[in-house]
Amino acid sequence: MNKVILDTSAFLALLNNEIGKDIVEPLLPHSIMSSVNIAEVVSELHSKLSLPTHQIQKILYLISEIYPFNKELAIASGLLKQSYSHLDLSLGDRACLALASHLNLPVYTADTTWSQLDTDLAITQIR
Image (cartoon, rainbow, N blue to C red; front, top):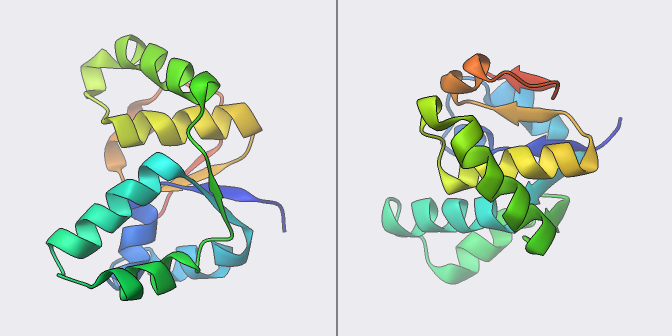
């Protein structure tokens, strides 16, 4: 199987045992997430579930690769803000989309608003 990009919402669906987890789980050995999306996951696990750092670090090992948010991705995600202003995409959403475009890989999300994106990216909604 080829590599895939996971959005924060897709990974959290798995971790929270939500609808779509069965789609995400087999993708884990092939998964890439932006470091921005990892920060969102950490924030969610720490603030909502009060997990300690060592447990969060173990959970992050489920992701095959964490891709650094570099200058090129920062510019690309920043430019997406105006393109999709009608959808009010978060920085995490835009970082994920920029990474998928940069690596030309399919992306998996639980975010239903992404169905309104006008893009050539292969986006799979897990819900």
